[in-house]
Image 1 (tube, rainbow, N blue to C red):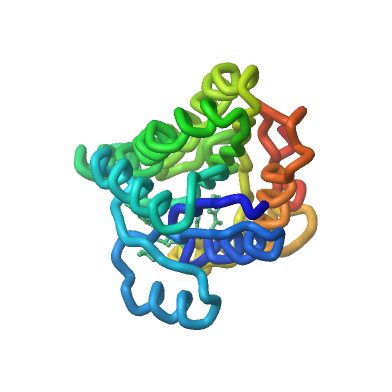
Image 2: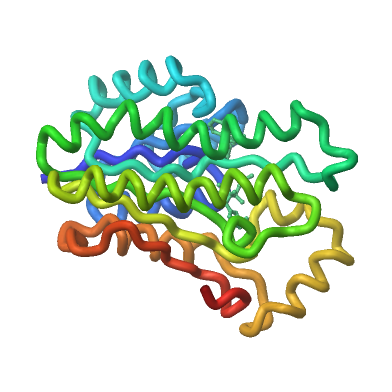
Length: 240
Ligand code: NDP
């Protein structure tokens, strides 16, 4: 039996690696994305994985998008809430819109997507949800009150939903990456990045594939006893 998985933000960066890892684990994968059509097309053409465009911050769009995936591929067994954005700035300079947008997408997206697929998983007695948090949600980060709050919220959301899913075969876990070499980190100024890398005990940025391996582990068929946990993959930068 092939499990059906949705990976939000699954066409590039960490999400792309997760989509490929779940496919390699035998799942049928639907990769969601926000609007980068060129990248989504290149990804789909190269991998054969179907890409679906919707905004995870839009509640109705998530319900409609997940219904479309279920109609195309079958009931959704696995959800990876990976889509995320940054709108950095110190509090004095951060606009309300920058606060709101990051909470809406990064945290609201997890709620919207879980609302769409959790009831079916519960009914069928099996499901895996993995929410991508962040080291900056665990430790905080200068210039990121919005992002740190959203990611920290994801860790609470995970533990609460894990309790609701436990009796029904639905596990809910978080994975907190450290700094990974994706477009998101490429946007960090080089002099800041240099200081960050100096604080990573393994002495380098992580690779998206290293995060994807952790997600595949949490989504495994025999992973039923792992729930409500946070897997921290950060090169030793924050030992939580
Ligand atoms: P990228 O910026 O490289 O990719 C982000 C992905 O999310 C893209 O596929 C993008 O779609 C999608 N996306 C953004 N907004 C939305 C939205 N509203 N609806 C649907 N999809 C959306 O990010 P990373 O791969 O670096 O990060 C992935 C996750 O890992 C994020 O949650 C991030 O916060 C987290 N993380 C990353 C770290 C890092 O060092 N890179 C460290 C810790 C956590 P599109 O291509 O269409 O724009």
